[in-house]
Length: 330
Length: 296
Image (cartoon, rainbow over all chains, first blue to last red; front, side, top):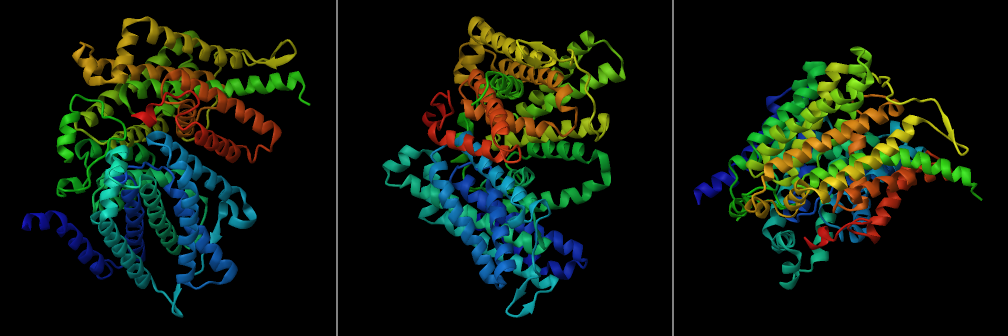
């Protein structure tokens, strides 16, 4: 019992304590900004965790919802001078509605076909953001007004706690989803759709719900990113964003609870240390990433978390040891 | 009304671009067929092929006939290294397929980073293997280099077909694609087949790089876009075989030519993405796909 607690909850509690104490420990605004980015990427990663880790649906288009949320958030503030909570709600709503419209046809596809279709969708969103200059501001994007909550303009530390609080809520929602019937149903869908439906799981409904939930997480991350960077531009939906998402999910630990925090910390902090290498940066980044996943193929959370969500056979691993993989994940 | 000549020009330019996408697509499909991994470093071999041509021909002043084998050899080594130091260790450690995919992305980053050190960030002129002077064939203007791309694609298709369907080794490759474990029980050295698929795909990518380099220009960051185009070709055609992927590549090339001619080229990109997305709704396993994806 206590070991179970140590493995599964201690890292979360440590992150909570560290997150609360962080503004006392660090002083520069730049470092606090990095901490905010870590929380934002962690939220983004949690959405992917629900969709891919739990539900087994590989989307390469999550950056579209990240961008849609952020653009809607910015546009509602610019055109209607909407207060912060209303603008956030608008961003989330737009993202969820679009995700529903996209999910219904797209989720008929599987594995790499689904990955490609979602990537195509995100690239269309990106192209529209670049080309519809009058509405989206084109490549230079839109300015986001400074965040004001209940008539008070938020200071940097307040913005940090605001973002951290949302990250904690997102984390709890992720755990809650995993431990309820939704999580079980999604895991059943991932393992075998036919078997799941024969057990009374409405496969389409759960896949679409997972897609919509993930889009909520992505939109929230996008909105918070817009608050921090004070600007929304097409880079929100470019291919680099989804590469970041996949990298953080893999190095944090696929389908683990606290993995997104660790993964986010690494993808935000590593480039800070690597910029000093100048023209060697890309090369060293690639080498370090390859070494990292070779020696920690289950990510950082794989070091301590035991009953993380089981890993998925996107395609059958091509080794003689598939049975070992199955034994590991049960 | 479209004149026959306009149509021929469109088809020719579509075939040229399409052949490049098809070459990347079929090399992706070859690797995928044996290893079940989409190699996100595949487009980097086109970059390596184009830029190594610059190195051997422009920098070392070697003749083209000697440079081409050297370029292909460099790419073969690259493919071998990816299989040995990225794919194999990850598979041995039972990594999730998505983790293996990130491993190939890391390789793409290593190749781009390495190329940046050798060739720098500027776009380089890639020497042409065939003449770029325009020739006229039945009223249609073309260049030998353009025709070389198309014929090279056709020859690659033929070679791959002969390899896969007319040799024992090809049978082994197809067997590993169906089930690596059972093929091992049949005495096939699955590891070697997979290593061969990586090396072969790298060589095909390098060949595409030599041929398309003079048109695109050599740039260290050109790989990722080509990987995505190749991946699009694979998915549009269907993941069943390299031939389906090649067909997908040709379709994308022709689509691009037609959309750019009729619509504005400004909106060509989102229109093509939209068309591919719609096609996928109608044919969820690709145009020629086996129903592998839905029946796995």
